Structure formats: structure tokens, C-alpha cells
Length: 166
Image 1: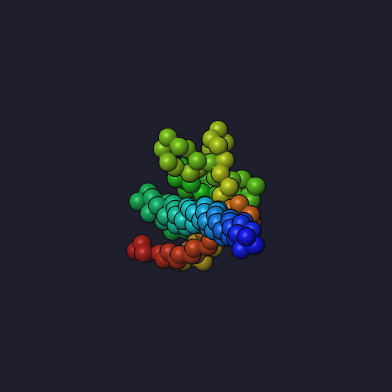
Image 2: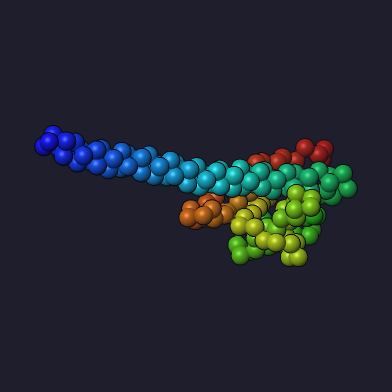
């Protein structure tokens, strides 16, 4: 009879241990899922910032090529400074960079710009131009905040040389 009573208590202890193991397993799965959602957002923002930095350099390259096609003097469109550029930027029409100005996103076209009528993103782009006569150095710096990660930044640099005949 005493063996039967002790077995009833043993089943209760086994059930509590099993419940503890299951709870620990579920908490582990939930922790992994929450981290994966966080990393997905971080990676997505980093990829977007990389493409925005690359686009900043491509916009300047396009402006250099258009200036050459329109017979403008090499480098005349680019005084030294920090600028906000987007696909609408043209030679002689560069806005000074302001860190509080964030790029806007047009969901109908998939394009980023500084259009104030569109919703703002958490990305800002500083295109730093250093004109050294026959060489233009372009740094495209994209800053953003991603969740709890603040002050994220990506920088790309390119050098453009005067290829026009003198």
C-alpha cells in the first residue's frame, strides 16, 4: 500500500518536470523567432541603405555625363560641399545637405526622393563632393536608425576623372 501512495506523488513530479521542459522549449522557440524578425528588419534596412548610397554616386555620375554632353566645363556643376541628391537633381540645382531631411518613398514608383508630399523614411543621404580640378571625389553617406540600433551608416566613395579632350 505504501508503494502505491509513493507512485502517485512520483507521477505528479514527472508531470511538473515535463511541463518545465516544454515551457523551456517554447520560450527558446519564441526567443529565436523574435531575434529572426529583428535581424530581418536590420538586414533589409542595411540592403536599402547600400542601394541608396550607390544611387547617390550614380546620380552624380549621370550629372557629370549630362554636363559633358551639354558642353559644360568639366566640374562646373560641382562646387565642394555636402548635398541632397536624388533622381530629379540637375546641374546647378543641388540642395545643401540637412541631416534632418529624410528621403521620401513613393510606393507607386518604388523611388526615393526628397519630395515633401510623400511619406518620410528613416534614411538620409549626404552626397559629399570634393572637386579637385581634373578629379571629382564623391562620398555617398546614408544614415538611418533601425529599431533599437541607432545611428547606422554606410559610406561609398568613387572618383571621377576628366576624360574630355582639352
